[in-house]
Amino acid sequence: MKLLMRCDHAIAAAHYAGALRAAGIECEVRNTVLSGALGEIPFPECAPQIWIRYALDEARARELIEQLRTPVSGDPWTCRQCGEVLEPQFAQCWNCGALR
Image 1 (spheres, rainbow, N blue to C red):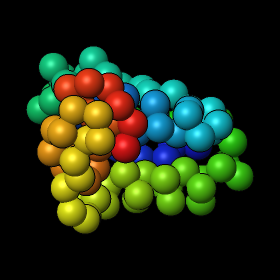
Image 2: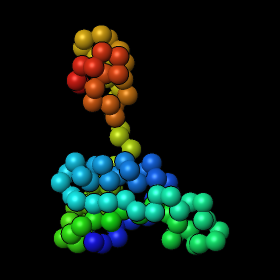
Image 3: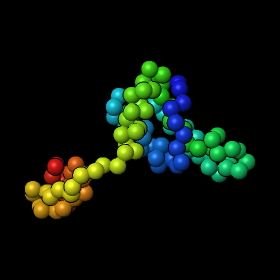
């Protein structure tokens, strides 16, 4: 196991870990319940951590995380089925479920 990164909160760690798993990178999230010890234990030790199983996956994992952190740019799009206007980061209409 190799420590990939520390996150500010457990929600971000779960999101990143889910994306890594979807890409076939085995990982686990640790330290999700230590925030109550913050102050008694240094922040780096309390922060949620993402660990990857294989060190060979590190470069690909870091690339995927960077892609997730980069804001999506582009123009809003209009759903062809219901006419709802959606922001560019969405690939599916929230209103009717149609794919972009």
